Image 1 (cartoon, rainbow, N blue to C red):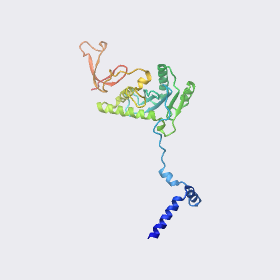
Image 2 (image 1 turned 120 degrees about the vertical axis):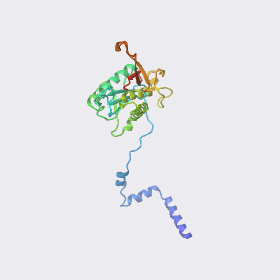
Image 3 (image 1 turned 30 degrees about the vertical axis):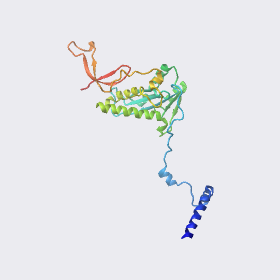
Image 4 (image 1 turned 30 degrees about the horizontal axis):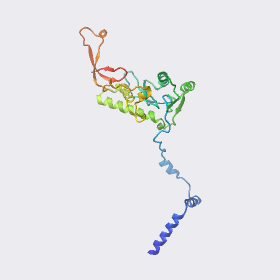
Length: 271
């Protein structure tokens, strides 16, 4: 028994002293060795995980703009829109939202957005990052970016993680919009108002991506006021102008606040 244990210990010791190179040589010299198992690769292959952090951040506004389209929504909005598009400034994380009936409107909306932000900031868009959707990748869009000196970066197909800023923002906006509609039991046709309100609030909330200030403050240099904010879907009373009512009619109409803008916007109650 003791001799058997000694023999086993000797074998283990020899194995430990064998270098990895020698093991490799033995394997490769074996005619039955074929390298990687093709069947295993077919059945078990996964994508490599994307890095959790970003390697580069913009140092000024409009150096990098992220964009993505969300939709179509099954229920159209009150203005018959089924899509919305987000533009996110990488430096400030300021977000803009536009609503569309068709994806084909992306190019027209981008030109409108570009004109707005460049006039407001006095700077020019340097890089635009999007997915490879046809609404972004077409000759008209490419020609415009080339003429305006905008570098258009597109993600690798089927890799939305490369456009992570837009994808995460889309998810956050939709989660907020759904929650607001559910909380106030509003019809799904109010989704555009809920989306607009979500973006408006996110621009005025602290974020880890921007230290010690909100996105709108990082964008404009001015601290936002929260005095005008109201709970989405709250009961409100809309004043009826004299020109639109008769002498004996009431001066107000009951409704619910459905969007937050530079001035409060309310919608007439349908009940």
